[in-house]
Amino acid sequence: MALMQSFVAQLNHVPVLQSQAMSRLSEEDAPVNPAALATPETVPNSYRDRAAEILDQLLARQGLDATKLGWDWKNDPRAKEPLAGEWTEAREKDEDHVKGRTILYCHGGGYFLASIQTHRWATWAMARLSGSRVFSIDYRLAPSSPFPAAVHDSLAAYLFLIQPPEHSGIDAVDPKDIVIMGDSAGGGLAYGTMLAIRDAGLPMPAGVIGWSPWLDLLHSMPSVFSNVRSDYLPAEGFTQGGQGSIRRVAKLAATIKPDDIVLHHPELPSIQYYASNVALDCPYVSPLCEKNLDGTCPMLVIAGDGEMLRDEAIVFAEKNAGTREDLHLFIYDDMPHVFQMFDFLPSATHAMEASAQFIRKVTCGGEGVKHRKAVRVNVLGEERALEDGIVEGWEKRVGKLGGGREVLISLLS
Image (tube, rainbow, N blue to C red; front, side, top):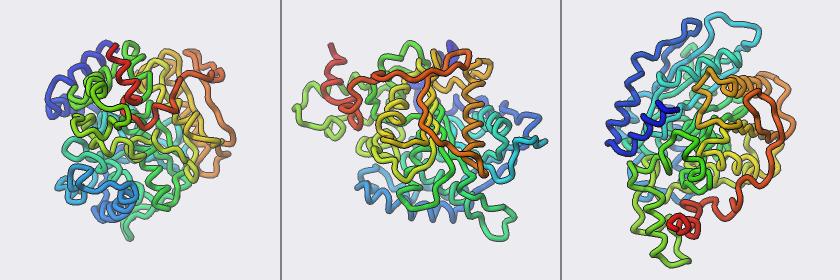
């Protein structure tokens, strides 16, 4: 935790390009596990072309064009290079391995850090535990390629998996055998991609898993502030090097009229590297803002009780999800953000095994997820029902920057 806090604390105080360079220092020393096979793959640009057509229609429904997004996303020069990916699987398959079972993995890093290499710990762990092949992707990163570049790339990868090029020698994967998964920003991307797949009328995947998913780029939930001391993320999150500090926004909120919407105020600074302010409440950016999960797929949400993103995980799974019976929520006592990376912890082991069990249940003719579940898990792996009332006043906060004008102003007292 001390090491993570020391590293992450610098991210809001140095140029973003320097932060990105720092995050890549470990790439050359990120070896493939000796028991794993790691095979590079590229997704032909024809899949980005098809994904762009789909995404253009979806964004039009959201009222988002290039002007509002702040850039010409359909002509990004970085999209001219094929999307890089990596297959990870066990060298020697055991009885848990099932041909066709596939995980599409989206790495975390605030949408502007990390890579396939930095997250080999996660892809190998899930390949081994769930008996799957894992396809991880190096989606384009902000600020050079902000939203919707990441969704564009993840959607292209999904299309590639379910309908690979003819005569390529690659077997198509049944969507019912694919789980989209990610940690932190990658977890948010997994759910955002799921919503895009549903809204486009494409075949749904078997399930989605988010480890400490970043579901709310509006920072609207209380734990963003209350859990600062028990997490290693920078206070108030990644806010354009501190430019979009929520406390700075609070000072602006105190000067505007009560009926004005803070998010759309012309003097509001840019809040996130990943998306323009007007896009922050788009469900493909902040899945917490999606209140209708009809037509989606089984979901598993895992978060730590001590992390800043805890409340958005709870509200997404327990409140905005409505009556879905195939959604599981696990909150781990005392754990920080993406605690699975601390694989020496019993809670990390339990969370990984729970994820693997979920994957086996929803793919390849498994028994499926037949009941709703919302539990706390202690350090011994013992489960107890998640209590009510953890996130007070969430209804008035969702979709509002910092939780809304009144909440923002209260931060100044």
